[in-house]
Image (cartoon, rainbow, N blue to C red):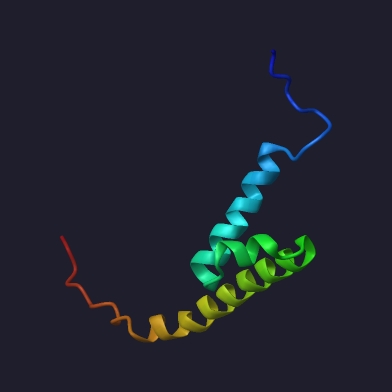
Length: 81
């Protein structure tokens, strides 16, 4: 038998890759199990995924002023000839 490329039925490879990426990030950053993320309804999974991204951005923004305050001021250099 010849294997025909699916053109109407099923989900595209690109879509499935984005779903797996969501699963990975929810597991890695959000401590979700694979089965918890897999069994969520699509809209609810998307909401949690977007909310997780928003939370990570907020935490990164909050840590920026702390990292700037720990940097040493630039040292004066003698003039070069």
